[in-house]
Length: 326
Image (cartoon, rainbow, N blue to C red):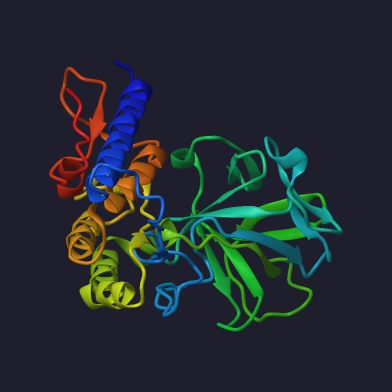
């Protein structure tokens, strides 16, 4: 059985569970009067930038999160750094306006060290002292430090892993060959004005931003306090009978999700189902879980070595929803 067939079978079985539960609750008849009144518990098991209080505020160097799009305008030439042809060759500093070729995506390694990726997906690196974007393999690319004039300034310098600063002496030549810098004068070719063109604010950015030591502490504190059992009591007391809980695909690998995600969200989901059972109709839990499971999409663990079916190991929710493949 293919994975797609397995998932389709699971969805069909869950639809049967839903129908059976509806009939059971209505003593053998479909209850046309029953209405679902639900609340969406977003921001709990999937972190998003809009949520308050924000988990992003405490991230060190939070302006430089993974996936952030940056544009750099040389104070010397008055032009933007650009990956010529979108990548595959040298970097220049000859563009009056900034768009895709002039936007560099950050790959955050830690709070001080980054890789830069250009429009055509190559990574910025060095060919001697010349700055180029030719490698498609991140491990072969250079790492960079972005040095700000001050915390509130948009003026920066870019230091390559060879210890030298990038400079744009002319519009057609960008090199990494300046070892010492002093003041922040407007005629200094190592100085660029940085613009943040795009931001990504999701769970990847949070866990990557805090790093492997701090992220587990931050996320477990968030999961245990953002939504608690009394919230389900409040929801039910106000006439609602269901809750939608968005989760990320990495929950399928809990308690050891792929880097940089943190284990523990599956335990929080288990708690949610236990709390819901005392407040809501049982079949609604299976209904929402069906929608979640069908959208998971990737990184699920195999049920057995000889099966193409997938499930989440040691998950009370899976067992309850009958999502086991034979």
